[in-house]
Figure 1 (tube, helix red, strand yellow):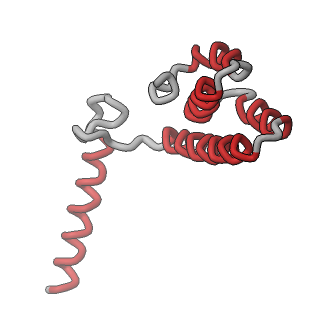
Figure 2: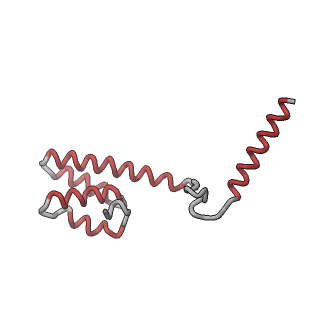
Figure 3: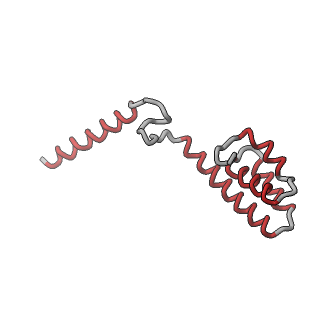
Length: 117
């Protein structure tokens, strides 16, 4: 659950849980870390993968590393100022960019009308 909420403060606690005696607890910590990401998480998971002799755990950690890559790739999209469901950019009420796009669309329509005539 902490991973789904991307609570970066949970990383220290999750790192401690990697040594838990219960496999389910370790797996939950591994997966949550793969969802949160952050500095050192990849190295920690790779080291854990190298140290284990359990083939199932190796595969699970590999899946977690794939998920971590996906999570890191998703962070790249935050550099784009994309509109949310309400059409707002980054939650701000800034319509200037939309106005510019509307103007460009209007100019294209006018240009098309000129070539038809």
